[in-house]
Length: 276
Ligand SMILES: [Zn+2]
Image 1 (cartoon, rainbow, N blue to C red):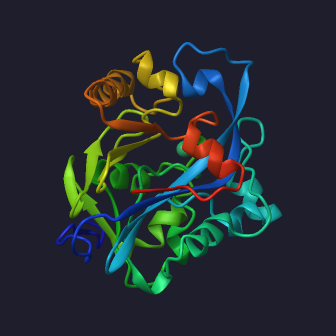
Image 2 (spheres, rainbow, N blue to C red; image 1 turned 30 degrees about the horizontal axis):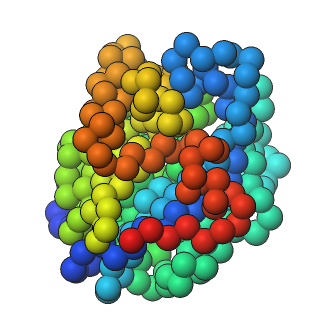
């Protein structure tokens, strides 16, 4: 399929996850009605854009990659890819993701792989700048959506993924990416959205990503308000029910964009957020 190979092997890390490093790599004003079905269209939240690193003894894995800074900071490209009437990316000075990775003591030489929750602009930006040998995992349905023409109206910068085609590995549904790191099918928000479960020494964390922007999505079992497909609402409901079931079973489920979620709030204050 277009030169994209099926996922062949796990990321090359061994042992178990030792730590999860959580980063806030930008911000975006989002209407409550986009984050929560039935929310108020005129109420805007300044939501953090989040990413994370899972550290192993012999390498690490990146989960999501924020904005493409080359696009955000170029007047012409920004106008091509972002529609100010509906969406505005906000990135602090510098390179927040690379600064966060450095602050966590991780080296890009030891990056074993990257998994992207979904193809929206606030998650794919790092992909074109990753080293050539680093595999990038997304769900097959997501790849088909992007390679089938999703673009600015769908909040996608297609080149982020299409130009990395050689390194894209597709998976179907739940899959073990590395020991103690599992992709969970939480499609609906986009056709192939995935969340990530990380089994740390002392706790298990699920990064919901955009299957739950806010904690209230999980506690009220209310999905996000934006879906691109006719069956998106139904699938988004299944996804939020899956995450809510995990939360009720005692798993920590972290919403993807909640400014009040304690770890993200700490990262927004510039604090190191490392959980083990
Ligand atoms: Zn997002």
